Length: 36
Image (cartoon, rainbow, N blue to C red; front, side, top):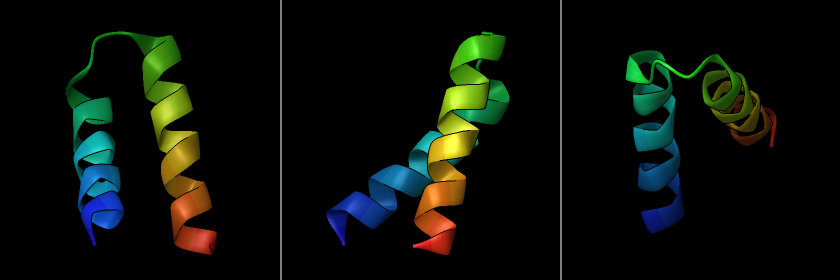
């Protein structure tokens, strides 16, 4: 449960983060979570 909540937080933070590189990495990670 904790990992899922953290993943959701990472997804939201990715949109706020100004760093494009970090955004892409976080969003890619979110996609892995969704398909998993």
